[in-house]
Image 1 (tube, rainbow, N blue to C red):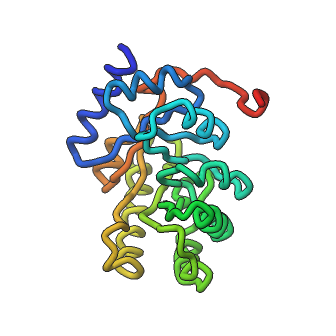
Image 2 (image 1 turned 90 degrees about the vertical axis):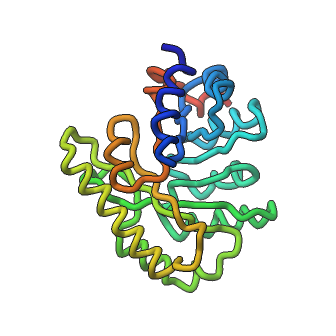
Length: 230
């Protein structure tokens, strides 16, 4: 099947549930991204800043770019002019840098707090209590150029559906608690980004509003060392 066929299969299924599909185009060429674009996709996710910047310069302006990988503070300035949503905010330090860079471009950048829900040490994210501490801090309330619109989490890479569902449910429960305590009157706090190719159906059942699908749309990734192409 073509990229367009793969995309439409997921797009029709996922968006019929009112969930946003992020096509994860990392390590795929602009040509592949544009095939999805021509089939109607407008939301794309990238893990690496340099790759996103290079693709953004070569693609239409109406693309909504999501940064979904771990973000270093010294890289924020490169995506601040155009990024639509940073899904992977895992520290107050990073959030303050996003605020600083957004202000330079007279923008308010939407962000998700990445929450650590997996039983794996390799995953990034805030612990539940760290997220609450961040939201309670005076430093956070002073920020004017970022907007927390929800939470993101990545489940343990496991074949056990029960564990995956539990982890997603824990994120939804945390989301509901944070919504009630800190964003009760804010309609913009409504996103839960969880679920990828292997577990997106479980994620949607547990309340996901954004899912990230990559290789099942674009095929096997061609790994490139972007840092060596400068």
